[in-house]
Image: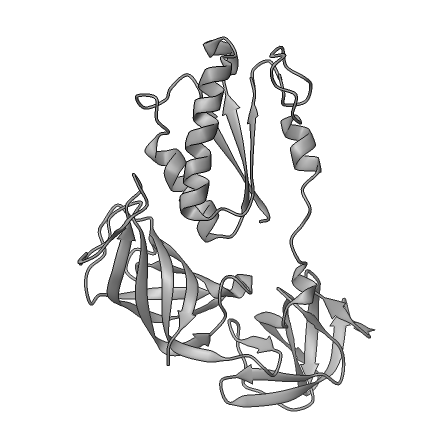
Length: 306
């Protein structure tokens, strides 16, 4: 995603302050590096009060400064009537763009084709005596003759790139293709074909959003999924939890509860891609319970350790 749209109900403020859910969503948008549009909704129910809108705008800009949000636009709307959504509203004091105009004016961030090659294998196909590795290019581009990495300690060369059985001279991010290497590799679904500069690691520091109603258990092993690859993982320590009320850092925490946003150190049994989330979407992962398959957390790699 390039952008997050946060909806604030102008008629249901928490004692005049933004609700915790809005603050939490703003924190998540900041962690993901997204621009933000704030749609202050139900302005018709508060008489299109400019002072109220100004107070909400000031409160959100304070949040943006605290979180270092890249870019924030704020627009008063009435979704029920469509005011300032698709056409101008009745409030003469607002002369800014409508929500649709803001969305249409969004400039996409750098395309994934500009990044390093990341090709997670979804299925391995037989082609005569050889193998084809099929999947979707998540970032970068590939062409026959490219040198690639197929694991922490293995390299190879792309022999051919195919789409629906036809040879291709070039393919880039978003394309679903099959890659043939010039030598046999024991690759399976979840493995990644990547550019030669790729790194792997078993220790990362990550921002973690805890999603499970059950708290994290110190020392417990979870399943980590990065793309389509899975391995065992453990939260080694919790560095801090973000306080949603003022965005300060709370240390000394031993377990994560539902909706906590924290910085944690994670170790994995098998090496994973050492991609930072700020540089590539492959720097994201999820943790889930190996017994119930319940999704426990979403993570974004911020720092690579050994």
